[in-house]
Amino acid sequence: MNNSEIYPHIDHTLLRATATEEEICCLCEEALTYKTASVCIPASYVKFARDKFPKLNICTVIGFPFGYSTTAAKCAETRIAVDDGADEIDMVINLGWVKDGKFSEIQREIADIKAACGGKILKVIIETCYLTEHEKIQLCKCVTKAKADYIKTSTGFGTAGARIEDIRLFKQHIGEDVKIKAAGGIKTKTDLEMFLNVGCDRIGTSSAVKLLSGGE
Figure 1 (tube, rainbow, N blue to C red):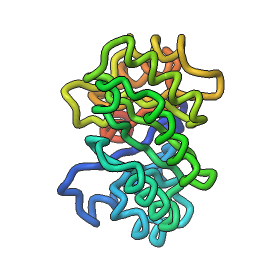
Figure 2 (tube, rainbow, N blue to C red):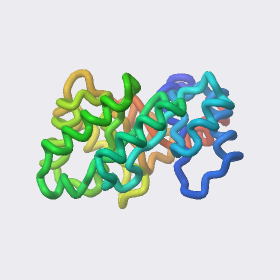
Figure 3 (cartoon, helix red, strand yellow):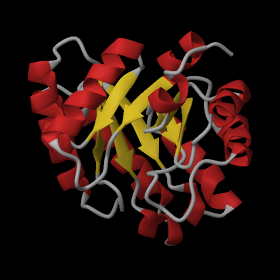
Figure 4 (cartoon, rainbow, N blue to C red):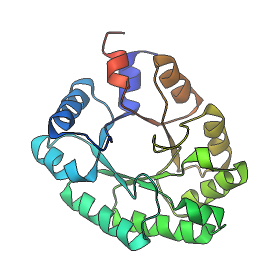
């Protein structure tokens, strides 16, 4: 797979707590140079990035990384991010609700945040490393019924990241309009190709440009 086939699927990501304005600028410039799908950056930098890079596709994270903010807080975060210029929202579900079996509440929250997106793309992070197979299947149904655009494996801040087995499981249980984003622990070109070939539409990683920019 050529680099030019990989970059359009990459959410070029920088979500470290210590990320600086200079680092965000560098990330955005790389995204424009290599034509990645988006940059994924902290919400506090969205307006800065939008003003400085008006043509850039900007993604940010909501309820990140633990997901236990209230639904009202997540919706408010989402509306502010969209007003600041975000094109895509990656939200984290409430994992405590998963363990309590509150799947109807999870579906309702996803639907509420989708409404707050105002037509922008919504990706739902379910943090697979903490879940049973049954829980993953139930969450595929929640994401589908709530009409989110993507199901996403991981924040990258959990105990493990994306696994091929989970992508295959998602494909069996999501609706036909739901796409898949893998994130967390994807560190080689082989990894990138493997996740794309198994059916991911997006990959969230901070490593892709460094891995691929040396040439085809």
